[in-house]
Image 1 (cartoon, helix red, strand yellow):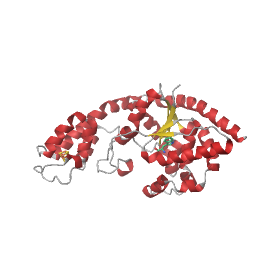
Image 2 (spheres, helix red, strand yellow):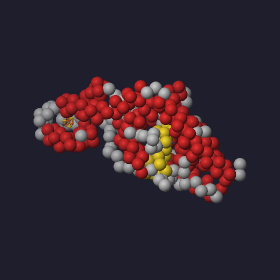
Image 3 (cartoon, helix red, strand yellow):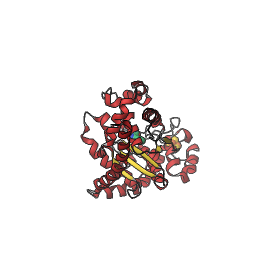
Image 4 (cartoon, protein in one colour):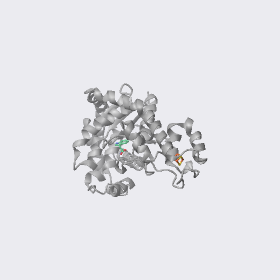
Length: 325
Ligand code: TRP
Ligand code: SF4
């Protein structure tokens, strides 16, 4: 029997290259080695978007389109929406009862998000409990491993602490999940900061070629290369790192013309736009096909929900038994 893994993303807007490199490419390969559950974390989205939650549902469906376009396969993996499986909230409540406030308050991600998303009031009971719901997501499926990025490590560590406390209080046998960290190339946004929708510096998976060219043209380059006759320093140029990631076979050529001042940055950026547009071409095509297949996405989510519900209800029933409730 294959080991089980679970991962999820919050549906808060269009997915971009950072999601592809940091998670989706990895998920696609994991599908062959593991029994995979991929979850649209819409309750988690609600925690930050509660003032205006109307976009969450459509964002979730769009996110699944992106997943499918990148190669997540509903024949291999369970694709489902958190809110379709009510056991997530039940288990989160139970885990919340036994989680000390101090564990939540010291969570570095919580503190960081409060700072970063300062436009919204996130000093809520729900948002503080974010990692409790995440723990429930994982424990409900008895997932042995959780593919995540380093930014989620603190949440997983908390989940492990919560399981240990649950098991020791009730003699339970819930599984302590391990992180599955994968090495992914670091891809920065077009302005050189972390790629993020909120910084408006990302290339979305669904961007049209014209939008990609425009963004490529705006990319930050080696600040020391002012005139075309100045030799550049590719290792200090974000554009060069895109070549390394998306056309490994061409990066030597770029290194050469840049460091020997044989080609200017404007042309170099024009080319990188083409590289990205070509790279995203097949994804965009599959995306458009899924977008046109009205109803198919919701059908996949409903099939996934059935499979998820049957796995989750087994655990929640056992948990209630362990509690004697
Ligand atoms: N917190 C995760 C994120 O923001 C999303 C998430 C929710 C998740 N539940 C999960 C990830 C369970 C892994 C496992 O990216
Ligand atoms: Fe960067 Fe290309 Fe300009 Fe070199 S030529 S500094 S790699 S944009």
